[in-house]
Image (cartoon, rainbow, N blue to C red; front, side):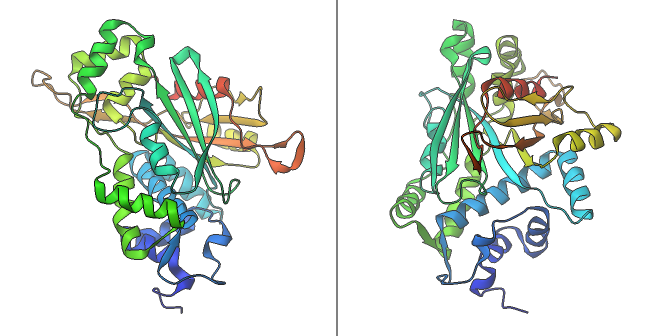
Length: 342
């Protein structure tokens, strides 16, 4: 059996150090991992490339979603029982284009992290019905096999003045998990394309902290005010920047939907068919979570929509059948957003 500290097990070893051996084994059984990221040929020991760090972050984020969405765990373990794995296509999160807080507004709070990891901005998708826009980040080294990020950005100025005042109040005490020492590590990673193990272990927890809620829970009155104009902003008020959903790339979406409906899972009524990309998408409805609002007059936690799990089928690029169509579709995306509307 190879030594767990050897290059042969570098990525697994990194996950073990962060999550423990049992959980690392679980994640490597649950998720398909690009073989190039476990290839030992010419690998520098105890140093992690930007691609390996991107894969590690995606695995940690997937693990976080499994803890928050029980049905995602059920689905994943059913695949594992059949000897199959989840192919992580993309993760999605929501942000607000609001500059008066400690961290950068909107998608910029994440472009500063994703760029050093090897991601580039690959597309913008207007979500006009929601007062938002989606920014998609695709990996430069392994675009088809490293999970993309769909970072949506909400624009408060498209809503009422009262709404804008409420947004400002809710986000006023936001904090930035990225401290100067993490900025230095990101600069090193951006410059060199790699980090030694000790620095990787410092950076990854800070990156994970960015995918959380960076502001205190709102009052229930503020939550209701936001909910009246934007269910998406109300969701951000309670859930922040966590993965709104993670997505399994499947080869036969119709078969997946049939199976899930036979099991009476809470599915989206219809499959979203892409108009401008060769994609088909559907999802579970969001898992209900409980949140304790501030100044809630002694009330206990209240139920609100949390995160969910999605399924996507991608076809080849029409002009280049040898390439996978990695694009998204604005209409599809807006349809998927309804999964957090309870």
